[in-house]
Image (cartoon, rainbow, N blue to C red; front, side, top):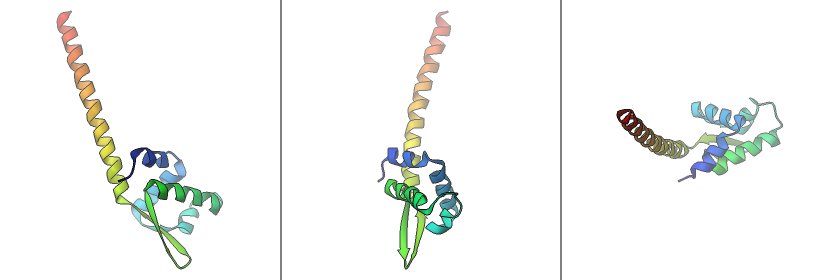
Length: 107
C-alpha cells in the first residue's frame, strides 16, 4: 500500500500530473514522455523519480529503453483516501444541518 501524502505530493506538480494523465491512456518510454515537455531530460528524470518513489508509476528497462507504466494500486489508494474524507465531511455537514434546524426551531 502507498501512503496518501506521498501520492498527493507527487500530483502537486503540473508536469507530474500531466505525466500521470498521459500514462492513464497508455504506457510510454521516458524519452517519449520527456519530448512532450520543454525541459532537459535530466530535469524530467527527477519528475519520473518522484512518481516512481511515490508509487504512481513503475518503470521497466529493456535494453536502452525505460518504459513507464501507471500503477493502478496508487489510484485505488487515492480513491479510498478521498472516499474516507468525503464521508467525514458529509457527517460533519449533516451535524451542522441538524444544529441549524434546531436553532430555527428555537427562534
